[in-house]
Length: 116
Image 1 (cartoon, rainbow, N blue to C red):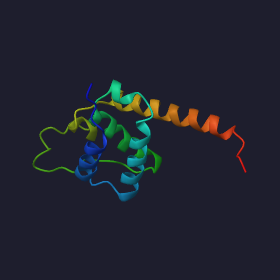
Image 2: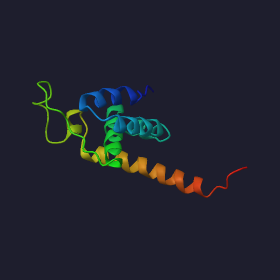
Image 3: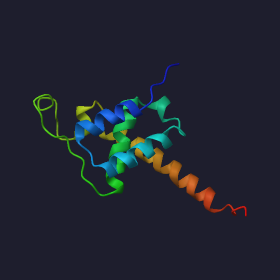
Image 4: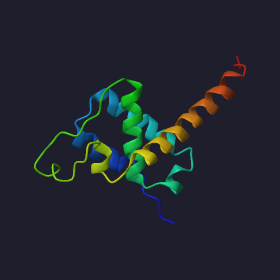
């Protein structure tokens, strides 16, 4: 089995979308955390990269949009992630799984007593 990391695509998409540094930074953190899940077995790396950017944008309340260029105007169909070959269902499912992971991690780590 050969699994490609999402980070390569993440960098490409961040550059293509001209994301802010804050969105890019959060998306990289989320992408790193995605390696703690089975998402890489369920979705392609580019789908995971798109979802991490979407989630990062939502976390900072920043609208992510595809900047029209000569290369992407013919393929652009309303939503920026469609240009990269993913759809709303995939984005939402990946985001829900990531949020479940964060909720589970926070729930169990907050119940632990710190060791001093």
